[in-house]
Image (cartoon, rainbow, N blue to C red):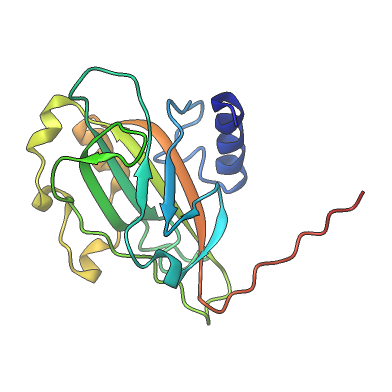
Length: 198
């Protein structure tokens, strides 16, 4: 798949999912890299369904960007639909903030501990509406190296809700370069069958 085709698909899927335009993916944004995410060999693919058990462990992250040696990036995993898509009063729920990443095709190189430890999505079987989960990759300015865990927020479950990700991004001069997303569902979820009519 060519980069141009992937980027077109990504932008279409973000628009359809109402993730763009938004507070973190502005209108007119253009990706600079394909952000590859996989859980135990199962890829995140622009809104595909992933079950809670499939996302319990942190994923493998891959991206390639031409830049200066030593350029670093921050990855966020956020839930804009917490506690429910109909009433997202806790958006953004902060599932993961991993800073100091360096470009490498397989996997990205981690240079420091996570600013927020990974907490897998917790979609429940009794919840009828899946949540959107979005991975966002940002280029860091040099000053971002001084950002610590306490600057992001606490690690406890309730501390992760209502994360003002857009304000955090603006305050620290982070620049969005890549994105990917999936629909989080409970373990008993049965994916709808798409009929192909010729």
